[in-house]
Image (tube, rainbow, N blue to C red; front, side):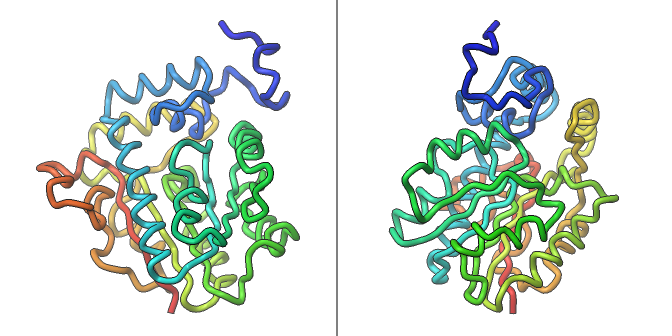
Amino acid sequence: MVSRQELSWVPKEVDLDLPSSARVYDYLLGGGHNFEHDRVMAESLAAVVPIRIMAQLNRSFLRRAVLALCDQGIDQFLDLGSGIPTVGNVHEVVQQVNPDARVAYVDIDPVAVAHAELILAGDPRSIVLHADLRAPHTILDRPELRELLDFTRPVGLLMLGVLQYVSDEADPWEVIATYRKALSAGSFLAVSHFTPDGMPEEMAKLEAIFAKTAEPATTRSHTQIERMFAGFELLDPGLVYTVQWRPESPDDVGDHPERSNLLAGVGRKT
């Protein structure tokens, strides 16, 4: 077992025995910033749902969505629940298209933030904030964010694979509405979210596994997720499974898009 001394880069407040959704996702994508309990949980998930495929397809959707926003002229992004940076970070994707593009990452996981700080050191166009997206004003009012992003101009707001960890009691629809009010017309919202619509029994087992962690997950229906785009006009092809959102090739969709188990969409604020 790896000792705490060998993980000197990990913030002291991190409980290595408590799985984190950000670190589980990192493991599923082949990253190296995860711990034993994260890997155990990931394998438990893999026993009930095609979780590795789900993670990979969600990551691919991120790239396609971000590039689509670049095509719409978006040059500043706010990535909420950004997770642990792996290959294909938002700033890497957008700055290949526009070297002057700006990206602000936000995550609640101290490990994700610590690693992002290492990656972003020396990049004046990207920052990372340690914050809880469920408290929008604690993020929107941060001076560092306001210095980097100009909210009088359109922003690409990314909430990918994170809103399932916002409970109904915390009202993700109202949370999004608060962010929407801070965005200028012409801004975009990109969302991906666990859904039980395609594999209800298997996704119920996924919920049961997450229920034993500090970050319970709530799967939601197409109708519930579509409500998150109130005040936004969905771009074609609407709210669909991640693999169906503007695939690079029709062959990429396959015969069972529902096995991606995340619905995804991008909307424009009018």
